Image (cartoon, rainbow, N blue to C red; front, top):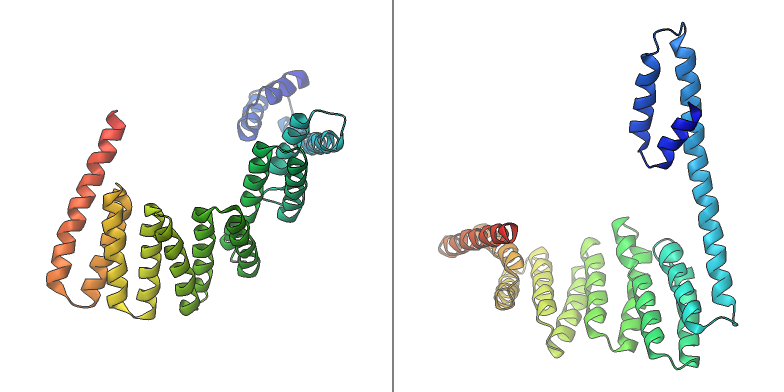
Length: 292
């Protein structure tokens, strides 16, 4: 019987199903005088198996991590094998849990890639470091604004050094979100304007639209409704030009709410009709995607 239980566990039945199946199996053993004794024994076995599963998972994970470290530090191996090992090490064990360690390994990877004149591995190392810097996003989810801001500042410098204006602007705008959340609208405005400047300089239309929308939100919070309306209109216009119907719809909804708030009802009616039209278009697009 225990063999069958272990077999069920190994083939991947989830915990709840396994427990319920065995529970009802024992309940049906009418010839047994004391079912609860057997049920208690079974539960003990199941929880022991759960503990062993997590324990062995941890042991195997640590063993794999140690192996990857050994491969990375083994200079006798081919460079591509070492780079693959450190890439897996960063992505699987450090990228979103131990950002500082991920950055240390990323820099080591980058230094070796430069020594070996490997452009591809330099690119890979910079991408991994960029992902680590983006942990500022994760800090934001937990309202850890100090660490988020530090990570995003490093991210901005990292992408500036790489000449990656798209992600440099991304870093600036997320710093803007932090200040906006904390109520420092002037500093938020500054960061979103920097994002807009970079996006316009390099013609990144999607980012231009996003930066305008972010500025519109800030100006709305600051009580500068004319500026908010101006930037929403610009964001909507560009979104339509590049086919971002969903963002154009959201922007139009915000614009509509501003006109209602300001009691500018003729404009509100105009944008209400536009909002309905965009919503209908979105529904048609979604239906086409489903049918195709």
